[in-house]
Image 1: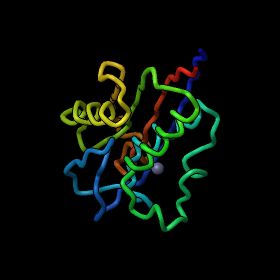
Image 2: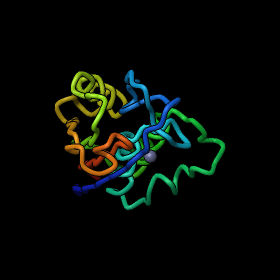
Image 3: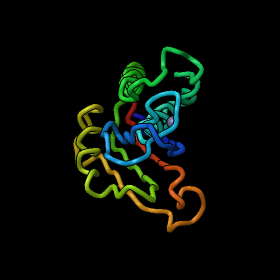
Image 4: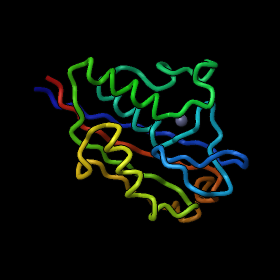
Length: 159
Ligand code: ZN
C-alpha cells in the first residue's frame, strides 16, 4: 500500500448578490462567492488536494470554468466526480485537514455542520475530517473581507 499526500488551495472574491456556500453549507451573509460555479472555495481546495495526491492535474483541467455545463453548478457534484476518480485509482482517503482564512462572517458556529457534510459526502469518519477557521488579522484583501482563502491537505492510501 502506498501513502500519498495532496495539497489544495483556492481563493474566491466576495461580492454582493451571490450565496456564501462553504463546504456545501449555505451561510447567511450579505455577500457570496464570485465564480463560474457556486464558488464553494472549500470544496474546490479539497478537490485540488485529491487530484494533487494522485497527480491528476487540477480542478480547472477537469471542470473547465468556460464550460456552460458547470455554470453555477453545485460544487458537491464536482467533489463527487472527483471521489469517483479517487476510487477508480484504487485510492481511499485517510484524513482531511482544512484551513479557511475568512475575515467575516464568523465561521465557528458552522464548523461542525461543514465537517459533517464533508464526512457524509466523502464517507471519511468525522474524526478524520478537520476544518479550522481563522481571520487574516485585517491584513491584505482577505483581511479586508474581499475574498476567502482555503488551504487543504489530504492523505490517501492507494492499494
Ligand atoms: Zn474555486
